[in-house]
Amino acid sequence: MNTIKSKEVQSNQAVTQKLLSENFFNLEFFLSVVIPIILFSAFDHFDRTLTGTITAGVWSLGVLLLQFCFRRNVNIYGAIGAGCAAIGLIGTVLSKDPIYYLVSPIIIDLILAAVFLGSVILGKPLIRILAEYSLKQGFSEEIRKQPKFKSAWIILTIAWGVLSITQALLRVVLLYTVSKNVYYAISTAYGNISTPLLLIISFWFPGWYWKRSNT
Image (cartoon, rainbow, N blue to C red; front, side, top):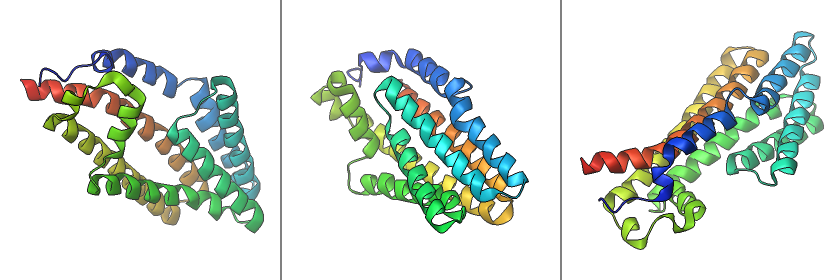
């Protein structure tokens, strides 16, 4: 198992620090999480939930588009989030019912859970596919044949599936137990914190898991 090494694995700490600084408590986090919550809450407080939903949705899409324009790339969750927001926003405008925008993240969570867990059942863990694609030459054919190499990606892919399921369940419970204002705030904040956290863990876990298996 000593062969399971790569430049990417050895630099996990630097990558983790970079991901932390990019995803939490910075200007982008404020613009994409805090501002939409404030907008929705303000309009909802004055019984203009539909207006608040559309305003927050347009703002969120605008932030994602600006990020793409400046970076010229967007991660898979950013793309999914944008698609989810766009579909929910269109449904809300056409139906004049904010429930479409509020329910759309639940549907996306369930779809993602099915994709992640389904990929494990099919023997092709999605996180492994994404890792090998992004690292390209980071893992040799010999490394890929190691049992611990395969099991690490299975564990991570299951973790992503479980996260998606728990997010969906939490949102369903909140949708039927609290006000739309509270639901939107918790749903938005939770989704924008839990996903980057698991992304960071996904970079850190393989190196730790392989090192632990060698001791």
